Length: 183
Image 1 (spheres, rainbow, N blue to C red):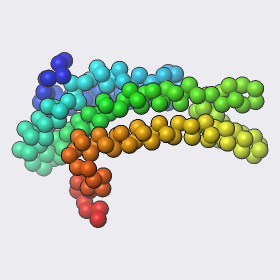
Image 2 (spheres, rainbow, N blue to C red):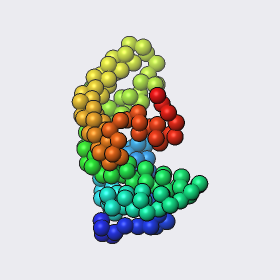
Image 3 (tube, rainbow, N blue to C red):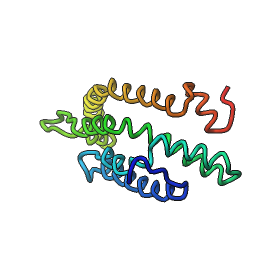
Image 4 (tube, rainbow, N blue to C red):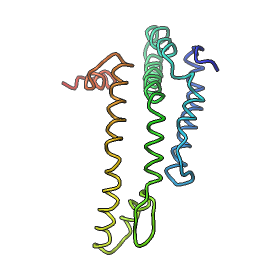
């Protein structure tokens, strides 16, 4: 599909279901160790037509404003998903690179190189306190080495969210989404 195509809300929702399923399966496969690298960027690229400014405007202007009740809520949620997708599309390559770096990170433990996530999981099953403490320190230090990049991804995401929504105030955005005053 062309990125210039604007889908109706029904077509958007149907295509979005496929995207969410693929993205969820990718996340699950990486989380449980079926895959050693994340390829979310490729999934986002395949569904790029879902996350465009014209699509966002169509969901906002053409349909949401004219709807009422449950239908208005459904369209609002589709618009918020489109906003989130625009942000994700901008960040996904950096997020993949960060996640893949974390997946590739190894801790030296008892003469072996073990994946960082394995070290984190092992903390729950090592019965000896001293060993647990040593491994905990090693994995925490290695994990912390990614904090600067984590922070940059979060900051970039916040900036993009302010731009996409048109609201620079994170508390205001949250209040609007929840439909309550957080002041």
